Amino acid sequence: MQNLEKGQSLTEMAMSMVFMLLLLVGIVDFGRAFFTYMALRDAVQEGAIYASLHPTNTAGIESRVKGIADGPMDMSQVTVTPQVLDFPCAGGRIRVSATYQFQIAMPFLGAIIGSQDFPLTASIIDNILLPPCP
Image 1 (spheres, rainbow, N blue to C red):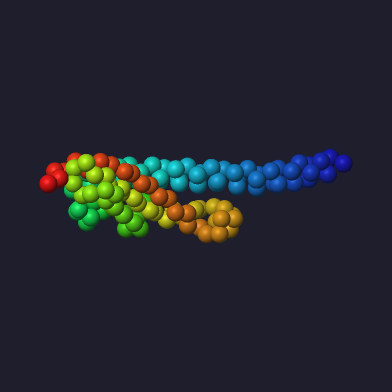
Image 2 (cartoon, rainbow, N blue to C red):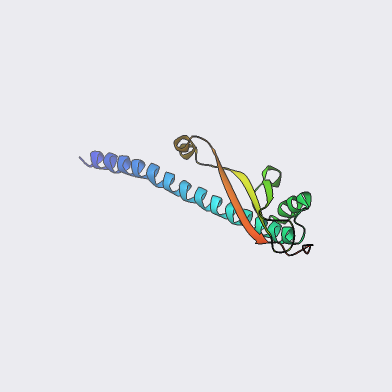
């Protein structure tokens, strides 16, 4: 009878460990995604600051976003999109957006959402400070 109890305990532990490990990997994936998003958002904020002084310099804005990012992402995979909302001089507004395809490590989650890639997008709207309007 004691051998059956040991087998039952082992089966219960094996079933619960699968659930606990999936939960743990999901939490780690969420933490990685959040950390990557925060690094992307900070890089976009730096790009928006640069864009407020140089609103028509698209290459410079993209270079600033990709050069300042400090995180776990491959910056060659980041897509930067600056967009002047009003007019490209003082008093106008500019939006700087960036998108990154985050790789999910947990295979089961990718099967649920349909892909192992999850797009992370950060967008900042800033006021244009220079050049002065004519």
